[in-house]
Every structure is written in structure tokens, then in C-alpha cells.
Image (tube, rainbow, N blue to C red; front, side, top):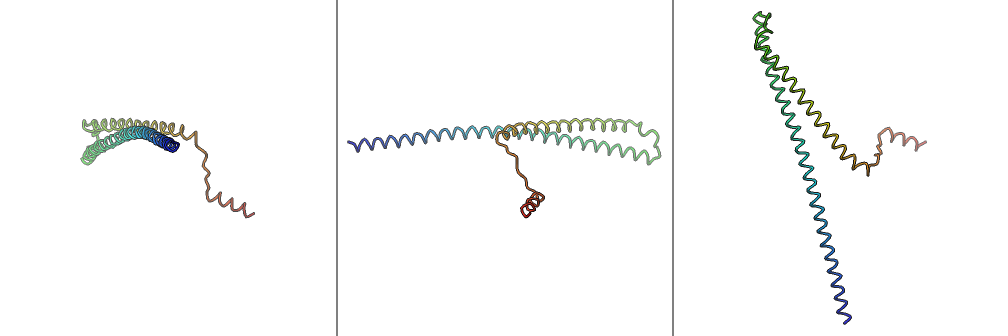
Length: 160
């Protein structure tokens, strides 16, 4: 009878260990799933931010191209007028006035887009620094940097 009870106790202990392992495994999978979800969310936010900045850069590039085309057209009008010795009054022509206004408008649009892009980058960097700063403050230690000069000073002190 003692042997049967010992086997039963061992069996219960073994099942207890297996139950603990199964519960720990469930806990680990839950944590892993939560972390994966968090990483996916962060990746999606970064992708959205990069997409927004990419669109701004493309808008700026397109506006710069339009500006260049307007300047080229204005250059042609100017060259033609000066080449014909009609230098007086060319700047008053309707075409040149429209082009000059278009170039100025494009300059303003480009400046606004660049300011928006700069602001977005600054906000992103500030938010990233805030996230990283909170995490790093708890565990951050100053790094010791060694340069050739500090190595040379250390070697000189040791040899003295």
C-alpha cells in the first residue's frame, strides 16, 4: 500500500509540474502577443509619419519643378524681347506679369510646405526623444569614451 501511495504522490507532483508549465506557457504567449501588437502599432505610426513626410517632400519637389518651368518661360519672354531691342515695356506684358506672379506664388507655397515639413520633423524628433528619454533615464549611465588623446595621457601617466 505504501508503494501505491508513493506512485500516486509522484503522479500528482508530475501533473502539478505539467500544469505549472502549461500555465506559464499561456502567460508567455499572452505577453508575446501583447508585445507583438504594440510593435505593430508603433511600426504603423512610423510608417504613417514617414508617408506624410514623403508626400510633403514630393509636393515640394513638384512645386519647385513648376517654378522652374515658369522661370524658363519668363526667361524666354525676356530673351526674345531683349533680342528684338524691345527692352522697354517687356516687363509690362501680360505674359511676363502672370509668370512673375506665378513664380512668387510658387515661392510662397514652397516656403509653406518646407515649414510644414520642418515642423513635422521637429515634432517627431521631440516625441521620439520624449519616449526614449523616459526609458533611458531609469537605466542610462554616462558612457566612458576613450580617444587617442586620453589613451596617450593614460599611457604617459603610467610610465611616469
